[in-house]
Image 1 (tube, rainbow, N blue to C red):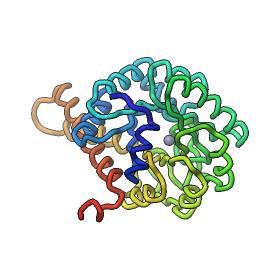
Image 2 (cartoon, helix red, strand yellow):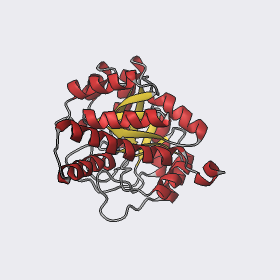
Image 3 (cartoon, rainbow, N blue to C red):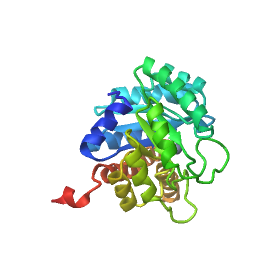
Image 4 (cartoon, rainbow, N blue to C red):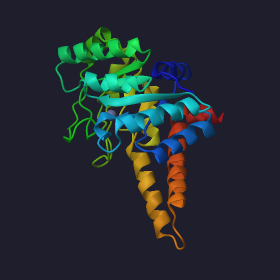
Amino acid sequence: MLATMQELLAEAELNQNAVGAFTAPNLEIAAGIVRAAQESNTPVILMIAEGRMAHSPLHLIGPMLVEAARCANVKICVHLDHGLTLDMVKRALSYGFTSVMFDGSRYDLEENIRLTNEAARLARACGASVEAELGTIGGREATDQDESIICTDVEQIREFSQRVDVDAIAPAIGNAHGHYKGKPHLYFDRLQQIHEAVAQPLVLHGGSGISDEDFRKCIRLGMRKINIATANLDAMVQASQRYLLEDGEHTFYGLNERITEAVCASTLHCIDVFRHPDPEKHLS
Ligand SMILES: [Zn+2]
């Protein structure tokens, strides 16, 4: 069933864990994520970033994700990831997305606040949730440029959080989109300071490549939504490769099922880690 991000974040806050937000650029991947959510009876967020729409056009992927969420027997939020313009926010809302991110991180503080609140006004009119970003998360998701990481300033995010009407804020703490160059180095001290300065739940972008242990630490320090894209896309490519290298007949439907299975398994692992940030407590 369709749910807002705000609803899922409130549950995560109550349980002191995090909700997984998974990029779903095609049917097989969306099916794998929904299967994982239903098998584990856990709410998830299906999302698509504006930067991916050259390959996954919004008018096709949008209605599909909304229907997938609506027909599921667990709560699912459909989220626009890294919306770069108010026009894109409007378009996503028009397809029934229950959450939008307006990424104003490339603007100065005042302009980011102004545009974020404009996006929030549009979202609120549709009953949808809003995510904002401050600081520079590494890698490439929002734009074509490979961004270098600039950690979010604590005083800036304190002011930002008080002046924007949003349900979640994504800070930059050393995280990056895509594949990390080397081992990810997250600045947990900074995250702790940001968590103390900000009332809203925090979002960890660039989750693929971060260790389970670091995920758990991030959740204990206030991350309530964790974004995963590359891990599932890689799972899909690797499953396809394994299938095609096997002996015997290869069919489209065989390939299709392998992809969905692999994405489901990869998503289930994330869900398990995000649900139980304190594994010892979970076992006892
Ligand atoms: Zn992101």
